[in-house]
Amino acid sequence: MTMWTCIPCKRFWHYPLKRCAYCGKDLAEESAKTLTVIGVTEVLVPSVEHPDVPYFVLLLEDEKGFRHLRKSMDPQKVGDVLDVKPATNAFARIGIIGTGAMASGIAMSCLKAGMPVIVKSRKQETLNRFQENIALKLKKNLSEEAVNETLTRLELTTDYAKLKNCDIVIENVIEKLDAKQDVFEALEKHCGPNTILATNTSSLLVSSLAPLVKKPERVIGLHFFNPVEKMRLAEVIAGENTSMETVRKTREIAEAMGKTAVQVKDAPGFIVNRVLFPFLNEAVLLLENETANAEDIDAAVKMGLNHPMGPLALIDLIGVDVFVEIMDNLKEETKEQKFEVASLARKMVKEGKLGRKTRQGFYAY
Image (cartoon, rainbow, N blue to C red; front, side, top):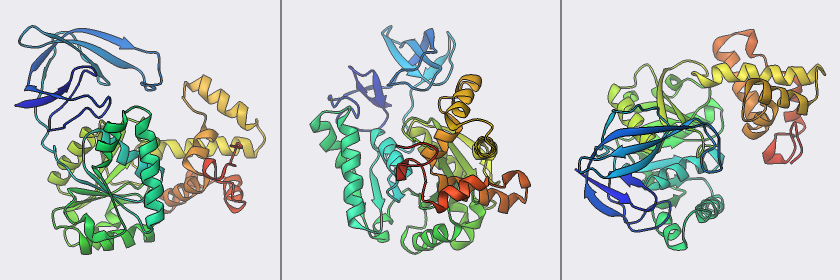
């Protein structure tokens, strides 16, 4: 077994990569190692590079007696043995539908993991802006040479047929069933029979899209969280007909992107949004009823519940219109009154106050 290691970064990959995706240095090809944990330090203070805590710094010893430092989001204990094995999805080719914030975050995560990515949009101008934004993000941490090499793995297209040879295509269009159904109908026509068709839906049932394809066992939900590059979680949602092989491959791809994949049954809102959105809605109701102002509501939640962001600021990040759409979808699917969206949120949508993307929401930007 072989791995490609970056000595300065202390990172390694299990598939061929010419240069480190982080520092741009040449990688060394070496034999795979069995690493034994001989020391663990838990880090509780966030930083720019590691906003999510706790994380763990592991002191590892290989079979030759050499010691290595590795960072991990998973707790380990002294004496644990970590086997370095090649990734089975090493050359996964990722297709992405859409050019919004979620699509951009997914593309960045895939590119940093060494995966080839092809992004499909309706307009070439949108794709050009997408590539410019990706390049700007890469330049923050990489040399010009490394940026250029990374961009060689990014392909842009307005043609669904170019997605034919993808291992997985991840849809990221607006949270409306008819829009997503249009995408899946097009994917059925143009993608290969073994391509996994994934929806990054926040609240719609995966099973509502499966009937649109001849092989519904390859349809799955793969739900990322915003901002994708920082959020470690990915929900893997199996529909009624999704095969276990599709679930396995999708989990592997998500984990290769650096995410922790949790498997969920096909249910409205899955896990996180089923819990989160009524909570966000309560914050809007507090503001609507003048219980407190936006700043104090957010400050109370941040300090009282130790959340990194207040609920109203989070809705601005998500988009007030997206928040309303998801609440409406949850109410439609569950028929539960607790998903009745606050009237203030509907009013803001009508006024065009959609959050950060319009520079005006619960806050001005």
